[in-house]
Length: 551
Image (cartoon, rainbow, N blue to C red; front, side, top):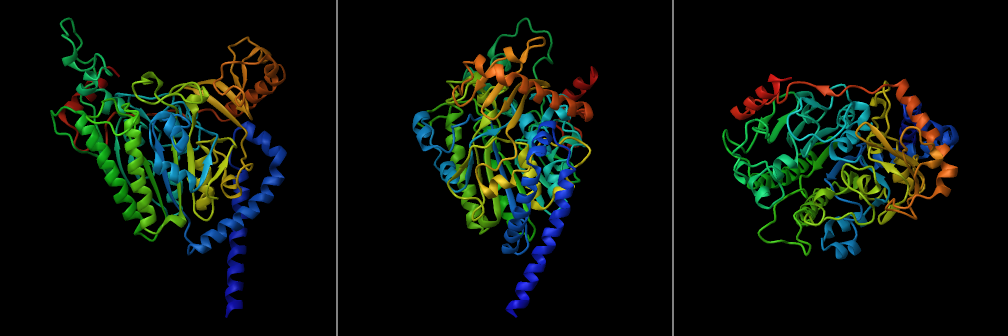
């Protein structure tokens, strides 16, 4: 009997390997950027041999869990610089305690060189689509009505995982546009609770933020307005938080017609999202299918001081980061309590560097790397990132390999057995980093990053070197090139670096541009703001009519 069982298991593993061979053939047909193809020409055979071992390991992991692929919980925190989380030493330096995140970091792998995009909308789009955001027409963060968003033609990781039977839910910040096609329940999520806009509207455009001297000129009570003419210059009637299921209409919650949005509403929104992420985790874990669950908190972004600070730091962002650490501790504890830890990948990271415009009073600082939100500097695009997968990823491990947030798209698809659903008609920037997670440091398949600000390429990273793209007419040999290990703040370019690396960086840019010419960027989604919301308040209808009147 035991022999028969072993034969059945062997046949099952062989079938998985055969299927994975097909998947690998399909993987090679994924369109990647020119630089990855340049690397693959050098290391393709080695990677293919490694992939056979990885597929065997993935098959064994799935067999251990009754044939079920792993659940995925992805937590994305807003505007926190590298070093702000996961380090007891820097907790003491900054006066912000993150014990739960620190413990979580010790239970898995710390990705020590995770690159993101310079601001929240682009980073989130890169994760969702596996594509750097300029390829989808996404340039920057938007605050009020724009009639734009993530296009329906883009294929998200949620849509790909659903093809493999995953249940999908999203809780928290979304920030992918104010048009119906861009809402999460229309981009692959079965259920979603999210604000239409972001924290500038929700916490900064309030009377309380004005009184804290953080928002000037928005609230009418802050000045006499005796010479004001245009009554529609200040944003008005914006939709706040909505909830929705796939195939249905969204519905705004917790704001009545004519009611003014306040800091109290914002705090309740954050508390509600914390309750809902726990509820969604419990509901999804109770089902017999794998799940993909996103939690994108609004905190630590907050622009009002609490009545009593809980941190030694006391800044209005810092204090909420410490509060959020407690909430994440509750979430991690619930994962363990539900008995799903061993078959659940949990990723925790930040989307970009701090909102340096409020550095000092916010309580957050640039720390190791110079720069912050909106900037291509390391401080804008380097963040803490931790991955936990008990029994698979070595606890307490770290990797200094380069990773980009878009890589999670392709990696999650590979681990879920969903690679075949990745589109082949466009460039996918995300590189499969399963080898790095399973085999450890030194197994990344990326040693480069292209850093954009909007639609402009601002810098190129290769290994420990980084070139700030020179203006037209300036040769590469004269461009500023930094050694990030020796000069992490990018303050002292060395001509000795540029003289040998300048031409190589320019070749990287040429390979990049050639692929763009072969696969032109897709357009940004366009539409009428706030369609698909069934209970628009009269003031929201009015602000949309004003918007439509001149478009």
